Length: 480
Image (cartoon, rainbow, N blue to C red; front, side, top):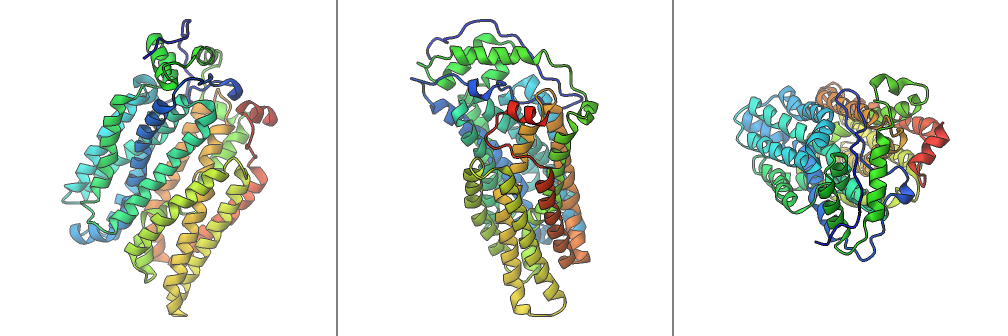
């Protein structure tokens, strides 16, 4: 490895996150000057590091998708009731809330790599607990462990990718996180239709092992090393990422200046979110997460097999089709993100989730009243696939993108923590209540989800700003 080509002291600086919050990615304030030229350098290490990190995103997807194809097998073999399986499905979100709250402190104190390593180890224990479970208790324990690591990975993976990537590649590499989450859940849906629920555990263990092994061969985030005051390692890491012959002096200066600027911000407190200059961002961020969950994604995602079976369609085939639909639609959404804009994608997506839920609601209404029974399976299948496709193109990824853009730098960490916590709370409420709602009225459940999608369209049209093509500073200047 070549000698690092930058000099100067690195002062440590941390963006305070209030009580238990996460710090924002340590990126320079001005995106136009964010990264040094990579002339003569190599992108191999950046791509390798990203590939290793997104093993954590794939793991995230397998954890979320595991319950959908396994419900009938687990209930039959272990004798779980509907209420007990509802706990199994939703307890993941409880662990995720704990992981989300602690992830920032872990990532800042131990480093990005060590935090991913700890999460991967916990994942392995979680999957083994589920594999060897003889009753509900071990299932719940394993699922809670998986939830914790999911909450941690949902924060640290995108932060690590953002901190190692050159500016001109940051957007594309960042979308790989969402893509691999979808790939993980799709793989679980498809494989779960072909193997037993105990063997499906292997799909979750493999990416954890790959992440553990891969972390041995990639550098730590140079921005975290700069923040920690480890100057020599900071230069070595940045040089590895940019290539042996790359001139890293400009980028090193930018990183040091940014780290020093963090010290000028006052310590953020939770009450600062409700100041007049910040409340709009809070309303937009929290509102998008609430409507994302009220649309029913975790009910549909966690219990897809049950939904299809209830409508008279093959649960296994239905989950396979969901897995096939998700990946290309998510790729399309990533392609359109910086072309059509955030608002357009959100409104088109919410319109699609309305249509999908409305079709599913009609199918269950016809079934309940004994009308056109031959249409019920096709309507349910069409509705769910339209819903999943529409969600994947907008309501899935876009709220997280907007959340990362709308908060001012001094409250980004605590604001992001609040929004993430709201998202997991909503996920728990929907995933736990879904089976009971379906038992009350299957048609009514989907009509409620479709109504929430209509309100989402109005919310986006009236309140959500367009952030496409703007720097973070331009967004804040426009709001203030």
